[in-house]
Length: 572
Image (cartoon, rainbow, N blue to C red; front, top):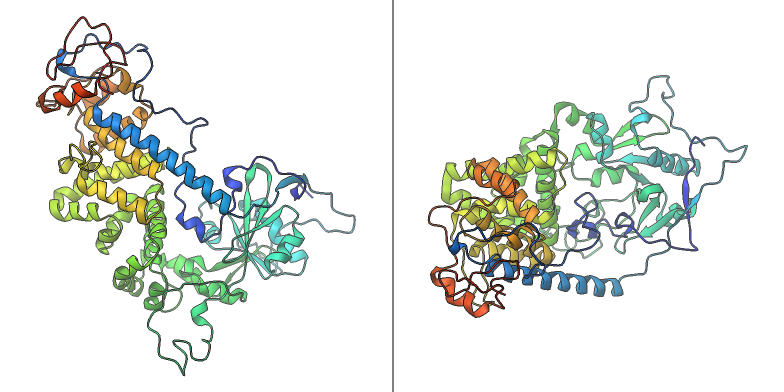
C-alpha cells in the first residue's frame, strides 16, 4: 500500500480522546459540545470570588465612589457557575457509570499486503475511459481505503451524503461517511481498527491515526415505506394513521432504499469510488445544478415525518447559498406547528449548528420568515415583533458580527454564541436586580426563563447556561453602566470571553468604542452618565456582605463601605 494504515487491537486501551468517545448518531444530535468547537482549557480555572493579590491592576487612583472591585451580582453568578459545573460533572459521572463500557481501541500498524493482494487504489477513470466524476485526490484517503476494502470483500460500499454533495459543489467536506450492504458485524470482522456503537441502530466506527473516525452505516429503509403489519394503524384492515412522525429508523434495506430514506435530494447522492461514478437514485444532480433544496418524495409527508428537517433545510440553504423549492418551502411552513413534538435536545442542537456555522444571520432570517423563532428562541421572536424594523436591524447586526468571527476561523464557545445573540434583548429589557427565589441579581426575566427552559427540557448543560448568564451580567460593567474598580474584574476567568462579546456589541452597534479601546489597553473607561455606583440602594446589602477590609485608612461613599485597595476588598 502507498501508506500504512493503523489498525486496532483489543488488548489495551490508551486514554481516549473526545473524538473517540462513542455515541450513537441519533444521540449525537443532543450533544452540545462537539469536537469541532472550542476545546476546554486543560485545567478548569478556579472561579473564586475573592481573587489573589492585585498584580498590576492597582485601583487606588479610581474615583472614590467606584465601588467594590467585583459586584455582588457577578460574585453570585460565579458561585452559581461553580455549582453548575459541579452538577454537570456529577451527572456526567453518573451517566458514565450507567453507560456500556466501550471496547478497547488500540492503533496497530497495518500488515503489508500479500504478494497476490492488489493494492487498494481508486481509479482515475471510469470503465469507458472517461475521467472519474470526482478526483480521488480530493477525497479522504482513509475513507477511500474503507470503501475499497469493503468492495474487496464482496460488499457494496459508497461514499454518501454531505461529502458527495460538497465535492460536487467544489467545497471541502467536513467529514466522509460510508454506507454499505455489509452488516455491522461483517464490517467489524473486516477491520480490526473498528468498534460498533449505538443501541438503537448499530454503526461501525473505523479508527485511524490522530483520532480520525470514518463512520460506516448499513443501508437502511424508510420505515414509512414498509408494508404495515396487519391491524396496525395505516394498514388496510386498521384505522388510517395520520401521525407520520418517525419514532424508529432501524430497518436494513438496499442502496436505493437508503438513498430514498434521506431527507433532501442533494443529500441522497452516492459515489462509487471503485467505478469513479456518482449514483443518483433521487435526481439530486439535477437539483444541485439548479441550486435547489428539494425533499425526496412528498414534502408534506417528509416534513411531518421529522419536522427537524425544517432546520436542516434552513442550514443547507444558508450554508450552501441554495434556494428552497416552492413545494418544500410550503411544507416547511405547515410543519412548523409540529416542531414542539420533536425532542427539545434535537431542536436545540440543530439551532446551535445554525449559529456555529457562520451563517446565523441568513438562517435566523429564514426561520423568522417561517415563524419558527417563536418555538426555537421565543425572546428573540418577541423582540423582533416588538421593535419592528429597527429591532431587526439591530439583532441581525449582532448576528452578522458573530458570523464574521466564525467565518474568520475563530472558535467560540456555545455560551459566547448564545450570549451575543441575546445581548440586544438584554439591552432592551430592564434586568431583574435580585431573583426572589435565589437572592441573586439576574438578567432580564425572558432570558432567565429561556436559559432555565433549555436546561430543564433541552438538556443544555447548566454550566453553559450559567456562563451565558454571567457574560450578559458582565456587559453592564464593560459598557460603564455599573462603575466598578477593575483589579479582580479583569482577573475573572470569563473576562476575555465577556470582552469578546462586548467587542461584537461594538461592531454591531457602533457604540462604546472608546470604552472597548480602554479595556483592551488595560485602562479604566470613563463611566457612563447616570451609571450605578457602589452607593445608592445597594449600599446596605454590600455592607452586610463585606468580608474584610484591607488598609482601612479611608472610607468609600455610600453604604458605609471602607475604601480599600487590593483584590480582596469589597463584598463577599
